[in-house]
Image (cartoon, rainbow, N blue to C red; front, side):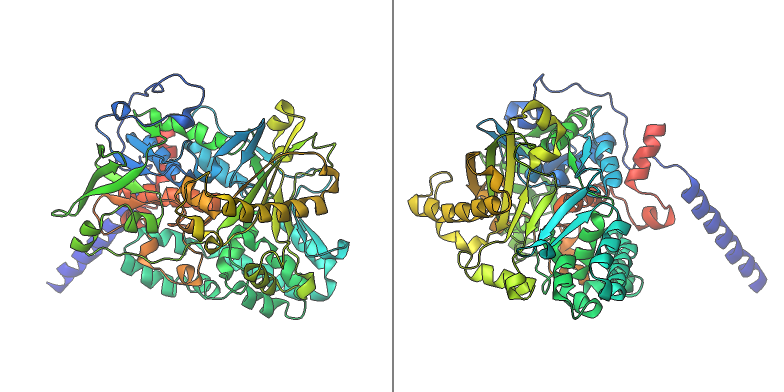
Length: 600
């Protein structure tokens, strides 16, 4: 009897092993895939990103309603459309794209939120996967002569207070070593820790698709290397690696604006992700960031889906008896029914604005009180003259005047936030025209500039209930003080543009709140806290307590376009039901399954 049981156990083990090996070798098609006949665009139009909502245009038999057309929402809808699902994307703004949208004024075309992208091979591949026949092409920032420099850091006056980030991990490290030969060991240690974060980060991101208790166990033990570094601030790591060189610390931490947390508040894990993101250099979309959504919208339309603008969602429809989401109610009261709902509008908006208070109380849903990420003030400047005439280079300028406080970036930020007019100077200066060959060719005499600085929502909160575009003279006067400050920074670093300024417009955090429905005017969604990355809080997962309601976008992953793309992919996996068996046993995922589909 015991021998028979032993044979049965061995047979079961063999069967399981064979099954696993077969599943891991097998080429899977996407979960939920169904064949479809490609549909033509809803109507012939030059710009598919500005198709206004009308109830009569809403298709029948909708698989997914996606709230929000930022890169995260479009990525999710694009992936779902590739497997034959019909999606309707709803955007409250007058144009799709979220912070990748562009606007034109006085003959100038301005970008709004995407200023450069790294890891281009990975991100171009992912965006191309959900694009139509026309894919977004990318121009490398910088020139061959300057080593494709993409960021110039300015800590104060004089060349000794400048450092240039150029393409190539080895180049960046070598430049630091040559500049600071007395700290070579510390520089190597710092970049080794950056690599340690990146090499061990998959457990954090992929764990969002596993059962929460499994994710907790894996993150505590398997993800120990990543977690320990995520628990540290950027400042702590700088103090460990180069404790006696504040200028070197400032140069290493200078790109903190890309995640919005000063060094003594930022998790080292996020800064490591930003720093390594540009190891291969930086790129800019040819034709401007709006091209990204123009390429994805036709993919969504091929399955009979639609992408609507001026389509503000008032409420997610939820059946409290079954706990299922079944559609949305629009601001005008019209309802759109669907089998599933995906919110790419952010965690706070989803739980606290789009789900009614009665439903939330009945189902005992969380009402997250998450702090908003960093908000900004953006100054858009139109210049008369060519890039060559104005002496402008494609690289970005990070103006961080910390030399006056012994290169202490934290003190610099705290001084600025206490009184931005007494301690001015923090600015990110970018020239989209210099990065985009299409603009250089089509509008050679028009040069655009975007200047960004930190802008706390509280500074403008007194005017939040006033009408956009007409908030009153006091608001305009206050906002113009920032405009004058930022123009001063532009002229300080580019005196040759004086007398060439034709157009200036400035947007406050209230602008982001209105146009992007961003809580607190945040540029990066929910705040990039240490706790967010050092733990596996279920609030940041793509799943919700509501059946058939999923989350997507920056809040599911991280800040910026890379985070939005990642959050879009995670959201699509969750919506299609990819689980631990698929990801671990079968070693499959939605991206490879779609590639298998293309081979078929």
